[in-house]
Length: 105
Image (tube, rainbow, N blue to C red; front, side, top):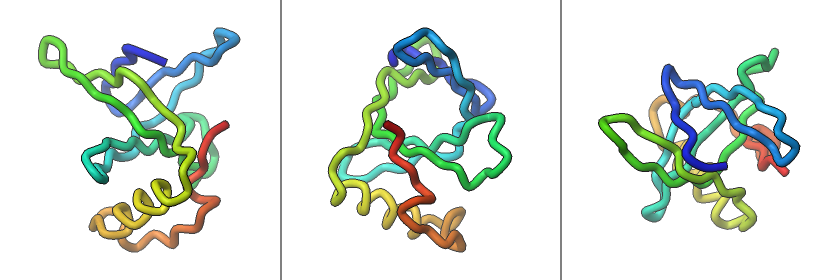
């Protein structure tokens, strides 16, 4: 998944079969000099369905782009992201459990 532009907090991702999916960009968080993005499927009935990915961002002509999304495979790294989210005011009242922040396969 590369060179995906986000605007109005929506990103369109394409899987290996060419199917496209729209996600709402819920938030970005920085942990240990890495950027993570929280995504919810745009058509989700439950806004608690959240996927978190490590991402690389770039800026082109004043627009921000997500150059790459990477799955978080390390449990310690995943826990650091959850801890960082719990420290942010916007997410402080959330009752985070591991299944709330899903690692998409």
